[in-house]
Length: 317
Image (tube, rainbow, N blue to C red; front, side, top):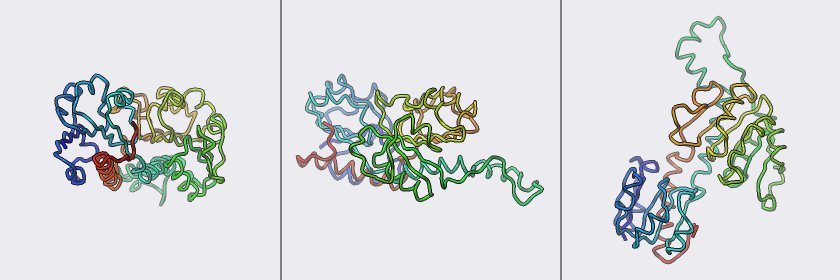
């Protein structure tokens, strides 16, 4: 089987082995692929692996030999699923590989906001502690998490993991989810959207991106938050109206935000959130810890092997 990887660099910049995939066929790997090169590079291959590369109906119709699209991520909105189904192309995705990594990153962002580690380290490096009159100094308020309320917007695998870590810090946890009938955690009461934003000291976003959740963080919901509250987003940038959030941060309407995702990635230079002193931004790295990517490649290979064997694993269509 001919297998083409169109955008492999983000998943494996060279620190991992493609061995589990290479065992399944003749593999051609590209670090990145421009849209106008997709059809040419896939050619007569039967299987293609993509992360953020879009596969439209027009593209798939030009690839009569294509039988399998493996999305090397959890989200699959880059694929025209209706077209794939009509054309008899199997589509799979991977979930669960980065749960621990993302949950860890949630608290890396939050602790940077509450403990100001990076800021104080930078000041020490510049000589501020050397010149201090006392044995200690604080350049910003420092806050403990114990006794605070963590509000989770979404309560799937990652939300559930974040809940456990928050409780280990001594936090109270509340949540909002669109399928309350699936909620079995008696230690985490469900709340309405309004209650979640109003009662939380920290809101962490773990909802999928769809028409119902697009820009769910906006001027109206931000106005419900405490002025001491923090917003954390490791889910999708489109869940947040970035200008509304920037306005709220500039006005000190909320205390701060920790973001690993933005609406446009890479962001534009004039993104209103970049450079704010109460907004910590990392470049969509929560999913990409080494251990998570090892699991990811293994699961990508297992999905493809299942397809080759006529079995179903993580099938979307």
